[in-house]
Length: 233
Image (tube, rainbow, N blue to C red):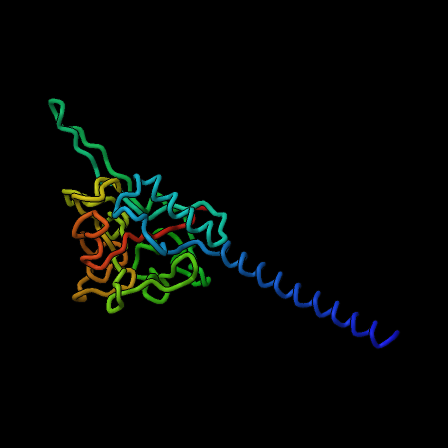
């Protein structure tokens, strides 16, 4: 074999090796995306707390997950408020929908493969592994917490600390996720940090109410219209 032919053969083998390495890297990235079953959205819907209801919020989760390479089914961790109809002689109460009943059975892992919770009960216990280090977005990036600019630790939930719809009264879900103006929504702190260390202020899912439902209202208490998303399959 001539020196020229040997050199060409070497270059061809090198090219195949490089291509193989790139392919393997891409495959690994795809595998990581498929293993992900929990994330915080990297952005809101751009219309305050108005997602067009639960269906729109689920679609927002799915769209972002798909952009990151996931083909799973996704649901936003959101509750709806109970509705009291007083138009007839006696009030008719329709229960709300609870976030914990919408997100599948678990277990859930973030984009880096870290276990968030093994099941629904674990998620709503002291063992829930959601904090500044583990509360990553769909691209595996951290989400700003208290002390960062801008602070984005208010995550919309509309739920009580056990994941059930709120019975506190008043609007706790920005009109069931259709309002971008009046109203309020319960939020949680993904970084588990608050003005004090009371149980509520360090809760990942039920810390306080938002200052309003508009795009300009949510940042007033440290929010950006972000959601928790969970894979349901």
